[in-house]
Length: 101
Image 1: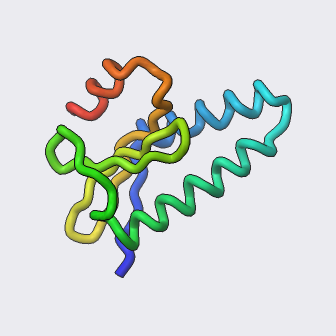
Image 2: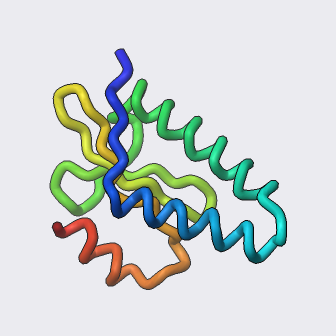
């Protein structure tokens, strides 16, 4: 049974900023499109296997690594909620504020 996937506004904005950064930096959307496919494949896999990745020190939050990025998510009865799409090269203090909400 696949869980319904819900992206928070924060996660959507983070993903969009990362994709726009790569599009601008590379002057091409090729890498961004590849990254979109990888993200969607991973999130779909998570919806089928939500407990496969590690728990974090935050209550009820798990994370999946995808290259330089982490997908932070929470599982409810029938939903997988993507809380953050995080670039691991950024300041982790910002991430702590997001996940403590």
